Length: 171
Image (tube, rainbow, N blue to C red; front, top):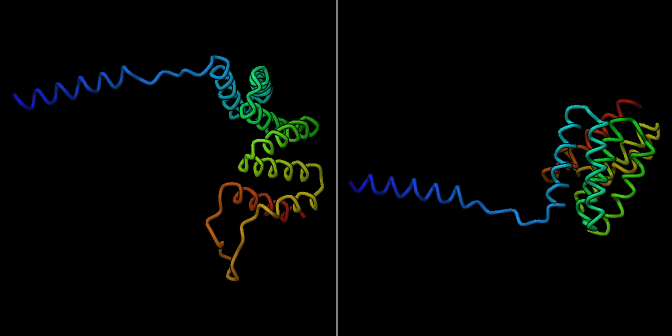
């Protein structure tokens, strides 16, 4: 009898927790913009770059309408990455520059590193290997005399190392 009561209480508690989910009280324009970014990421992952560009552009427009700097930053980064995928350097530079201004204003170090990687990739795509290497150098991990990293590299450092290796192989 006691076990049945405990089981019943657990079921009721589980139902209450499941039903009382925290509601999202953020403005609809932010939630809608995030959905547009998600749809853009999905389209990009499916190599549908034109649809991705449309979703990211609409998200950017929504974020601009409310001056949501973080959302604008993410939209510009996604648009820059999509332009890189489309091999559209003028659009890529435009969004990288806009994202860079926002990232500096927000002191968003991970995004600044991501933008440096994109700048290096774009310089390399344009045939300027020397500039690409110069951009990558500050992002590369440091190594000890036995060529072991001094600390565990972060994802940006791994990406910088991979791109630097590709550039070296291309030379």
